[in-house]
Image (cartoon, rainbow, N blue to C red):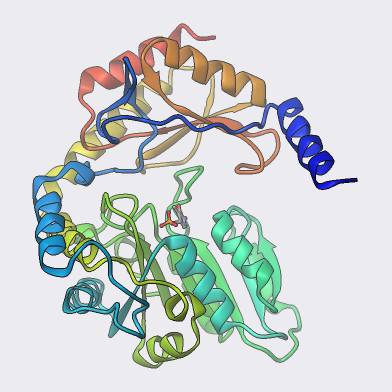
Length: 383
Ligand SMILES: *Cc1c(COP(=O)(O)O)cnc(C)c1O
């Protein structure tokens, strides 16, 4: 088979599975509305949960940062790319979340890859929740450690895996705080207890909890009174920007600076972005108003969805999926919503388990009550 044949074969298979992915260019950002050419949609697909991508303070901080530091960082952090803006953001994140150190990464994807691949060796075990994000599973697959997955949100399943004989290596337990496709929360206290008892480390990726829940928006771990050995927070969701940080103890941070290739062989995030993120952090800490608005929207949507035929997940987060099952049906519903002026993404395997295609509705603090009423009205007549 030639390269060309391989590629056209794979593309044809994707189409047959109703799993073909396309992109649409928007023009005007991701706010309450999504604009594409002449059309405007109510946006129920954004991860900008607090609306901070459009926050005047965040934008002004980015501008000022660019004037002072220029557009780009000029190098890896180990060469000349690390600035006082990066250092200030790392310190502020560490103080906020109660860790000795925070290290910035260019994305959550990179942070997860770096952590898992730099820490683990042959003979180690990674025990990950079955629904962990692709970036975590991929990192574990690329690492020399053995990957085992436990039944979603079932500590007893983790306990069984922990009890199995290991090869004398270390064990890393991996979960998300709030799961990206279901919106439900991990039982972190129980996972922490089991991990500690077994001498394993717990790593929590709180991409969807940080900023949104917990006192001052400190996230899922804070809310559940848990302090994982490794905490990953990302800035592409509630922070409204992009990037990520790993929170950890001092020696772990030093170890990552020596061995995490994503820090060494990759250009640091622009200093101006670090300035914007510091402004977003300040807004998040004082963001009870935004979190209350988001919670109001979540309550309104769930109350309305209960009257509809689809299965809801056990989610009190901004992520409220409607599990439809069939790929074609999920696409059809998304199309119908689009025709009615609402943008909701259909999520299909392999992003979600086979047979659980869904509409992934996300809410933000920017939605108004009438937006949610409109969405519910269309769904009510969609069956
Ligand atoms: C979005 C997401 C990531 C990836 O973060 P990026 O900064 O977008 O690369 C990692 N983990 C989870 C759970 C996510 O939802």
